[in-house]
Amino acid sequence: MAKTAGSSLSWGVLLGLGAAVAVTPAGQGCAPIEHKEEADWIDSVVISDVLMAVGSHVVAPGLVRFDAALVDFEVALADWGDAVGSSDADPAQQLAQDRWIDAMLIWQELEVAQVGPAGSSLTAVAGEDVRDEIYSWPTVNPCRVDQEIVSKGWLDEGWFDATLVNSYGLDALEHLVYGGEDNACPGQVDINADGTWQAMTPDEVDQQRVAFGLALTDHLRQQSQDLAERWSPEAGNFSGALALAGSSPYASAQEALNAVFDALFYLELVTKDRKLAQPLGLSNCSTTTCPDDAEHLISGISGDAIVANLVGFERLFTGGEGAGLDDLLRDLGHAELSDEILAEVAVAIETAEQSGLAVHDGVESNPAEMRAVYDAVKGVTDLLKGDLVTVLALTIPSEAAGDND
Image (cartoon, rainbow, N blue to C red; front, top):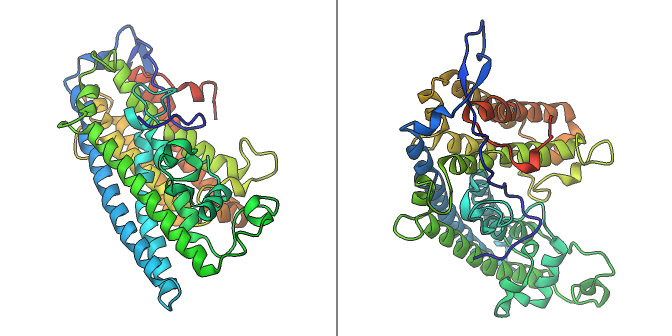
């Protein structure tokens, strides 16, 4: 089991409200929704297929893609190490950066699938904090990463168990592959105050970045493979546990479905509120805007990450190649709500892709365009925490209780 990170961002699985709804006629758009005494979907033949698809058609294939991307990154990283000091060093570093982006964007899709082991041990049923072992943003510490480059602490047995998640993972690798000759620490920190960083040549710094990066990548692969094993029918079979709600760890199908909904709520709590609203100055920002609070400041792929989050949301909502919440809604007679959610997702993806701006840059150079991306994502999440909650008798995660934006 991965160690707990108290500041991790995973969504608790809560009990359902025990109410359901029916659609009443309306003149245009989605019909207004009326509560009923009991939940219609509980008896739907689709529900077990929806829950089974989370593992078999969303998480498992995503982890296969992620591991393959990590292998490619590992090769590119080693090649960069071999090229340090030669004329091939810069293009080799660029290739390592490109392969890191490939892996990072696959994980950004999986960010929206934090069900079970990937989720927080504090809030999610069967959560084991694996997500934070792989990617801990916004809990990051590039200075700590640079200190480790000097100390080579990762060579010590048990280093990962004894070290905070902000020193490793995909976020630490971003700093390693994009870092230059300088470090991210203030002057009073030991590696600057005692001159140990300055004593290293630029080539030595790069060699240490590569060596540390290879150790971090090996740890990432272990975490990814362990997570895949937990979901595998041949091993941990968390896919079956989710689908067979009523036995451990989920007490009911309502609780299991709410776990999937909580994962989808990443789009509200993180993509919309943390990745967009905060840099734009719409929340948790003490100045007009807070562009430095954006994700992926050094690589500049924060806009691509938002697109990936939306793609991941769509995949979990539709169950990938399997059954999804869209099928459940249709089975219950709410096809128009399913269509509206998917239409809003398509608009949000198109808006974010057309922008093409990193969030940090967009907030500073074209805030109106970045606000349009925020509004498009909000178009999806308004339906998520409005009609979808009502139709399926779901519970909004406690982190978002009272959030009316």
